[in-house]
Image 1 (cartoon, rainbow, N blue to C red):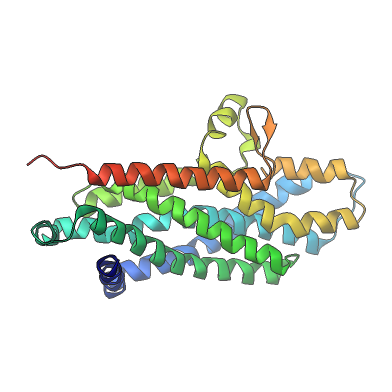
Image 2 (tube, rainbow, N blue to C red):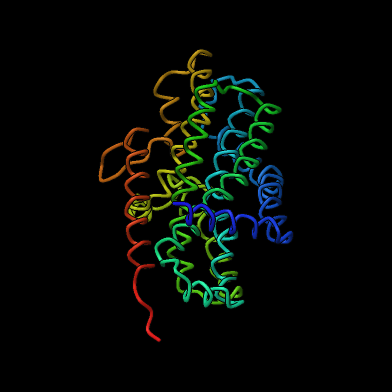
Length: 297
């Protein structure tokens, strides 16, 4: 274990030493929250208000709080996964600059080496996403705060789960890559497409039935739904206390993907957590099997 932690600290120091990579990782949440607040906020607001019955009156603070909670959940759902691809650059750099040849002739085994890559990716990604979570909470506090301390603790656990999921996923996809250009290409594709397939940019309930069924098999769908449930729980409670009928609140939650359906069954938060943990374990097994294979010379 000493070797694992020594290599993990070495990878973390390399991440902090590369000022460009560190800055790009930290600036990503800032750029996203500005873009989301600028462009997506009005879309979310119009979508939310248009779904309400005409006879229902709702305060401006509650509307702003609902929109801000959606934006926060969408941002975290994307950054928790996509940032890991930027952070995982150390594994590719070691191959590009020849450091891997030194490790190959050293007593360090491949499993130990790749465990250190995975752990450093998790630690650095958690740091970046802690900044993202703090920014989201500040934005929500400004727009309309309905979160409790329990909600915040659950959001932290959601971030940890999604970072673990993103770390093992990026490890699998980055393993065969040999150059920084290849990683940049993969990272661009993931950054562009993941937000759509996980329901961050647009609720999956707005998609066609066939696409909804397909996306219900992807773990990212439930990671996003977890964040939305915990971000919006206080909002839904406020709606009920303001006189909203239960069926209206349930309809709003359904339209925002808070109640994802898998094979005709509505998934609760406990089931979503189990799906995420199971996905992390499965991807982790694939990662360790893949990294344990001998390369042909």
